Length: 141
Image (tube, rainbow, N blue to C red; front, side, top):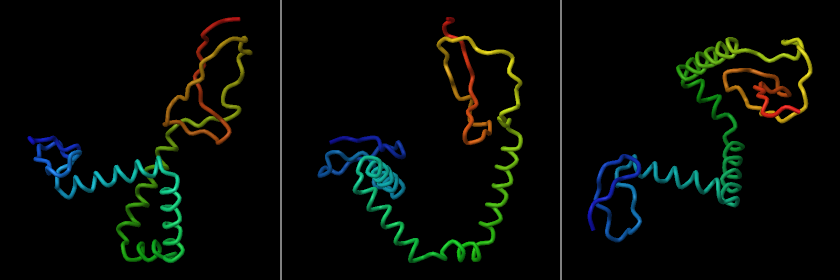
């Protein structure tokens, strides 16, 4: 039957003759990746499966409401690491430009025409009802 290349680790493996469409080797990491991808695809394309997963997670949270509180108490290093990461995120947000309604005084009105609006990127912070855009004139009226 020959060898195939594993889609997870890219190593060559000899597939089981009884599994015609085998694309992953038998290593546990590769099988874990295969199942993870299957589940991601199933959640994206099967509304019943997604609803069942959400209901199951909700029931677990209701039955184990104090899980994260106990986990943080038992793992202070986890809590400290989260605090440090949040500080880094806060500093990155402070360093990024912030869009405000009065940040730029209007120079003049734009002429009617066709324009392209494009988001400038993820490193800017803006209010929920504002967009950071780049305006490029494509045609003039």
